[in-house]
Amino acid sequence: MAEPNGYEHFEVDQHIVAQCRYYVGKIGSRFYEALGDEKKILGVKCQTCDSVYWPPRATCGRCFAVLSETDLVEIGPRGSLETFTKIDYHEPVHPRKGPLIYGVIKLEGADSGLAHLISEADFDKLYIGMPMTPVFSETPKGNILDIEYFKPA
Image (tube, rainbow, N blue to C red):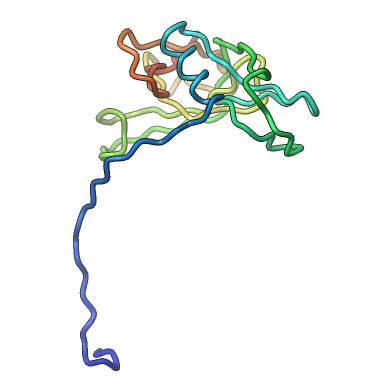
């Protein structure tokens, strides 16, 4: 059906690649430095309500208090599996080719979890609450994949 201006509907298949840098702030910078350089995982503890988040953030999600570098605390490295799924296909945004297992890991000392890769595991033997431990990259790049994946502890 023609639009009022006389044009027909059409689609354009295009892909845009944008080179950019994202500043994660002082808290995020310290988190990634500790992760890659020291193989330590930092969370941020709210001094108002005692919530501990990982990865760290600048504002408490519970009481909206401002958080800072002085609120960083070491957490984990062990944690528990909160939920998980298997991906049998590949998308360009995946960190590696499938099949993949993703899980949300809640580290000891944290009140929040983070979605990450799970390896060295049989999908059919995973369960909610399963103890997990991180495997750190030997070649850190300053991003969340400095933890290559989590595996059953």
